[in-house]
Length: 184
Image (cartoon, rainbow, N blue to C red; front, side, top):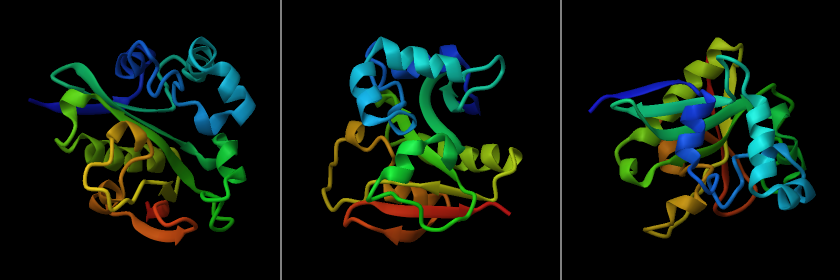
């Protein structure tokens, strides 16, 4: 089985999201919209808002395909594209560095625990670097629970970030590190 990761196209992204749109209709818009917009937009409005971010040949992240079938997604963009992060008490900016952010992951349950997340994160480093980023930041879950449900870890797991060469730079809550990788 071969894994190919490339810039997301709408069809690949939508296939990974499935009928429900990721986590119950979020369509990976959580960090891009206010809480009120998210609550009102669950489902079709969030889907439409995400679709607007896809330009011909360019999407706001990457899709992993195994043997041609979409099995994973990672959203990566300038941190400024995710205004809700700036308002987060737990994930507030560490400093004034112009960072890019990994906002969410989704890996099909048939492809979990097979290295897809690490491969997506490594590819996200190249994707961001190719677009001028010097630092990529993520906000994974770091929990002592042995089997934390993957669907609730849509920002990734700390171990995935460590495996991809990220280092913790801050922690404002016990289970939520802020991790960075310098890309130059």
